[in-house]
Image (tube, rainbow, N blue to C red):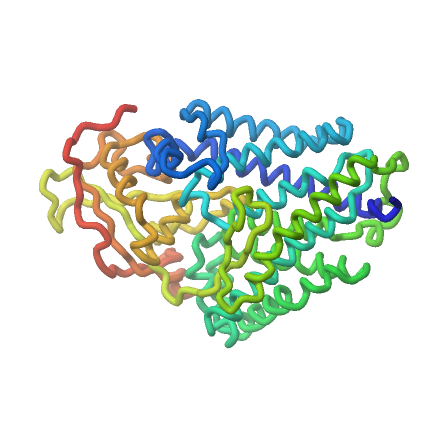
Length: 480
């Protein structure tokens, strides 16, 4: 079938695949380095406890059949190895069926991790990586042109990501309709980046232009993805540029980079660069079995799209939701509401046997979340600091801190090494504290004058107690 492949998109496919492989690498690396304290056998939300109460059909994962920290580590590092191979172009050295199997491996590996990750893996970009990763399996190898149906499904994902985010904003916080949300967003977002202070200090008229441009990009431009070229290419490049703006303004894990990869898959690079982007001359026709398989998968995914599509049209739209345990077709969205005030939970410890107000309380420093008012925000994306993100949610409401915050405090009191590795600095290097407390502070970006006078990018003020001084019943430290 001549219509089945679109050879002019071969470079867009190549760029998409390499970016996706890089995102896979970051995701598996984060899993390997953070899992012990979060979901390990002695973690805050242990996998064995989760699989004991959740059946396999609701959360398919290899860890239902066997779990140990060593096995999980091997699983995650195997994902890193496969991602490196894909990043190096190993799929191009294999026949079509071999390339498909190679791309299937990281999807299956990461699915097993996400489905037992619980709260720590409840972010929309986890499902997005799985949905996009599954589609990548059917993009074929270098000896066949990219199939039109899979390219369409990738645009369908991009449409839901952007349009879903646009709708949730218009239906949610009134400040989006008033174009005032960005008066606050850069300061109150989950994890500011090194340029967030400067974005926040932009003149308010520019913030209104920024919000209006966001609405255009998310509510109007996505429809242009399904128009003829070169309009679709222009729409995709505009979306990619918008995502780069978000990359500069904050840390959003791999959400922006995966969205950029989706946008680039819709770009007809040959129209932009001529023969320099021409496909190889040895591209062959797609075999019949491959055409039948892609058509069948497309039909199945379009059928599964019913609930996400209905969600887009619903007045009660939900965001970042999976409708099937394989995360094949999902609902997306972001910042349906914007906080006007930034709160942070600050955790402190003391070695005093009886804690008092004048006790020497020393503060735990996190890698990404604000703490020391003089510490400038740092770039971490696309790497995902899961504990730091959940600390932001805990500051929004204590309900978000259940059931992991208590175990976190216990591990700090025990001096658990795996937990301390998630932090930026432990103020008790020799022995753990006898008491730990948590306090809620209001943070705001300083003004230009305050920054020049104090050198601090943040100003904070005490709000209330979040957790009173707490100690272990037994003061013995955890085993190293």
